[in-house]
Length: 147
Image 1 (cartoon, helix red, strand yellow):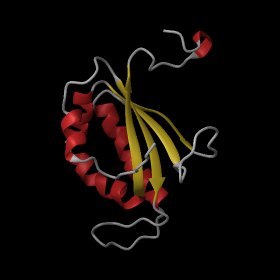
Image 2 (spheres, helix red, strand yellow):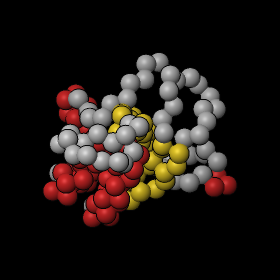
Image 3 (tube, one colour):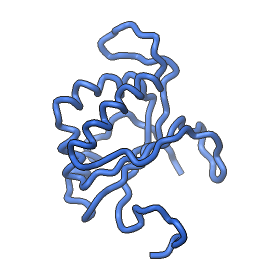
Image 4 (cartoon, one colour):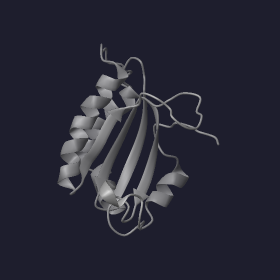
């Protein structure tokens, strides 16, 4: 299996994302890798780490998620790979819920997103962004993996 972190989607991915998508909410699983030191495209000087710059972006995203009816569900540092093999582990896993692909796209087009986007690109070395959907987008509780 080839694993390739990216910071921005290519044209094919964007085209697919603009399709209607699943009914109901989507849960975006983000596997994040940070730069050791933040690097802003405008050349500004900073003492921030990549993780700190991305955290600034994340704070802004939380507010925008609420605007479109979504929300942050989970985030934690990656500490161990229990199964499988990758060249490098990701630094953090985050899951965000959007009411639909359309609402996620709406959020991406908000002027505030453009304002905070500099922190995202300054902090990220790359990521995988995985869309999940369906009734299984719930905590398992006592029901296990049943349908």
